[in-house]
Length: 272
Length: 365
Figure 1 (cartoon, each protein chain N blue to C red):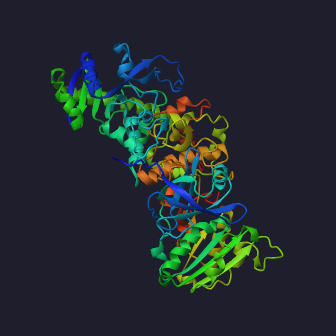
Figure 2 (figure 1 turned 45 degrees about the horizontal axis):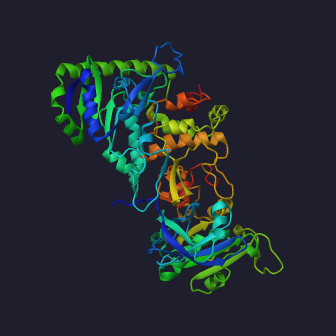
Figure 3 (figure 1 turned 90 degrees about the vertical axis):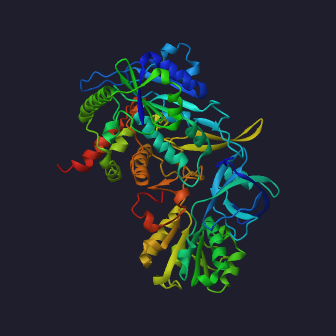
């Protein structure tokens, strides 16, 4: 019998972690083992309510559970935020191509995250940490609006202690308790401990942040083919059929969501 | 491919035989108020043809040979406007006919559009099981166009007003009957059971058909020459380079966002998955969606990359003439002119393409 490609599988919310006032990480246990490659996304469904795409923030090596870090911004996410451990959701996927880790081998990897955009990058970091000998250096630069908006507060210092890893965080607006850098994430993209000729950059965050980080990276001398951007648009099916997420000659769901700037640079209005 | 001659008086025997195994849709004629008259002096027909289930047509004599395409886009019969797609295993017969589908009255523009739908729903990593079940079982009966409407412009995109592939049967009207091309095993099996009403076509009959086809092509080309529609080869270039053209804003002044153009279009395919709660529990619905609607690209939080109407019109053309040409080698427009007829704002794809062509190639002169 053929498979219904639109039908999600059941999953139970096992844990809900509060990251910030508006962001929670949901740990889900799907009915069946669930594999994904870092950077691929899922369609998370509340039966009878709706569905939305999210990129898992958990370690792809873990097959029986997955974490999804979600900001409360719309009707679907506000319903999700009202849910608790033990409640049932459903999911479909994984979809898209994810990060091409084979191209990152022996490279200095600069990872730039903005706000809740650190979520997919956490999954990437777990993957990189799992085979850290394959990479030369991992440099994380993360920006949030305020110190209260920083996600994975307990993990960031842990990551900074790992070998080959360099972490720096900034906030757009400082406060008396914040001892780190104050300024947009582009302000901590200088004096980077990387060698440009063997570096690649991975960027994920709100469109306006990605636009200016991309410009900064080009200024620094990154080649368009070495900048990996996580694009997002309204999606419905996740399978390249419903037509919502067209970007030039691509569908973000099927051909992305990760694209190099080289693939996008000649397109109009990619940051809108 | 075998070609037979079928007398006009035996058409209903042919249809009845098909109806034994299939849920047959056949064309009927309705008198309609002319929507658009030819500005160039051609006297062109204005009647409409509708596809109706053979079993529901009480007076079988109402069934006609349609001289050009029907009003409805063919995709309506393969991807329903609203459909329950719930369940671990797909049930393509939950809605619609219980028997496989047979459609008579399709034209070459419809056959072209089916190829676009096939690319969307049968292509890629995952096949749509609902579409696949209906499409693979379906019997496609196409027919030559001995006439065309004012809005028909298939030949501008090198699509002929008669089919040479993509069908099971093809009918070509000739004298007191039809030449019947039998292109597939499925069709041959039916033809074999109708030997008493079919005779092999003669060379003279085939030559007669070729002459008729040539005559309609000539007349259509003369009609299209007056409209100055750009040819297939220039479409991608003019639409991409016309990104900042004023034509998008000008044309959208009369758009009332009714969605008629996208829903009547036979190459459009966009849909939305919607979850609802019914008495039986949660349900997944698939509903046609259209890129001319303002929320088509709106994301959670309110951002919308296509917030203005002119952006959505431009997006529609980029999808049809840039995305599809890049991904399939062909444009997602069959030249059927349905969108021109349906538009209350008189937005005309032929005019927009002509403008884009002139802006690209004639602006310096």
